[in-house]
Image (cartoon, rainbow over all chains, first blue to last red; front, side, top):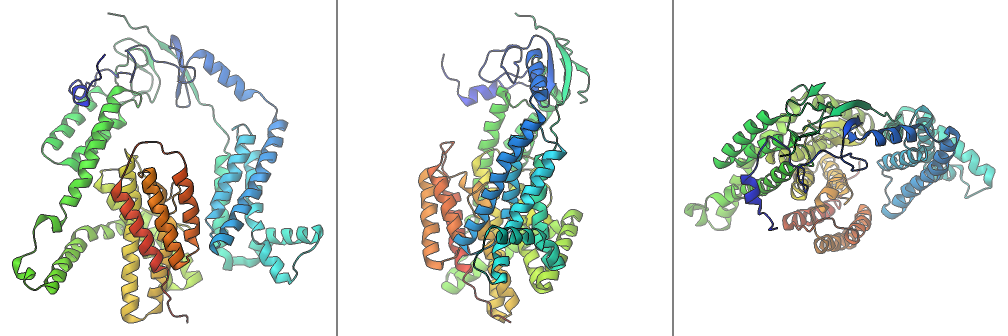
Length: 215
Length: 340
């Protein structure tokens, strides 16, 4: 079969029926399993699916344990928060700048990790975890300043714990003077919150699909 | 057309809301609109009104299923037209249209400068008026006002005003480029403490468009910074110098080759050798000016140059624009306004 030139195809352009790209004209296919749609179909969020895929998706959405998801979201979220703080410090070391926009990156990393751990279910619990971890990661970047202000070069675990707690409350202590810092924390935290909104499975149907007569 | 509870008149298949064609027989649901808009688009292109034709073909794309052959054909038309629009605007440049008058040519270098200066005035009077358009939009105005208030509280009103205007000019650069390609977008919205953004209502149809639109912001931002620098140079007013330097830094930051930043969109159009050329330019400027943000640009650029390149593409103009921006903005970070 010879390859058609674009100009030949342009001459054949019609707007009566959609021609599926790369296939001969046939019934539509399920977006998830690619099998031809027969009998009935559903609209699953933005996907057209067959009955089997709709049922499989519903089952998957209800399966698994809440405790397991909570644990995995923490297991993934905490390292993501540590990595986010690490990125902030790395950028500061490399460039000499403290770039507040990195808070958004932290929020994104933590949000994505918690969402994955929650198996993309979302909900208020995962949103809270993501927000808390993001806040802690952003505030941990204040620790060097607190240590410097304390005039100490280092200390034991208890010392660092106290410094960490002070870092968590420092945005409140700085008050209105730190308004831009507040906004940046807010944007980072909002990013993590938004990414873990409860997932909605919007199922519409069933819709009847009628077989087309063949010529 | 209301597609709620619709049944196909050809095959009686029930059509789910939001679909663009019947799942049973593939009948397009917006046949009449598609015919009308495509006829109009064809007429406009035949009359050499490429930009309006491009806008109409984009409307056609919105009514076609993305997996259809018709969508692929129209998408090719849009890509072809956008390339022509891009070249057409360069050829419409006053410097291309008419040669310098003989009387000015006889004045030598002075005549040449006057001829070039004429273009600047013409540009300001025509394209520059777009700068005023954004200020008439409530969302832009009020979000700008809010940001101004915040920055005033931290840095004083002079610096706040200059910073806001620099960011505004940057965003209007994007708007201008979007209008060039007939792409619908929102008005700029300022986000206090972060900057501003423009939301696209239609996506660029190819990497070249994305690069033109992405790099337009830093280009306009550069001119804003240069303007501030000229004022600082002439008057010695420290605020203007500070605004020029910070404006240059912000636009340089935006050149990070990381989507969705402007630099990432510019990089998307480059092939591997071009990305390496940009990387070398960044490295050179870092050696010369020692500006910290260039380290980050360099790391991202190397990662981009080594990574997967999806399509076989090349965009010399995007490369030249990107390198020009890196060089000039890096040099402008050396501005040292007097302290106090």
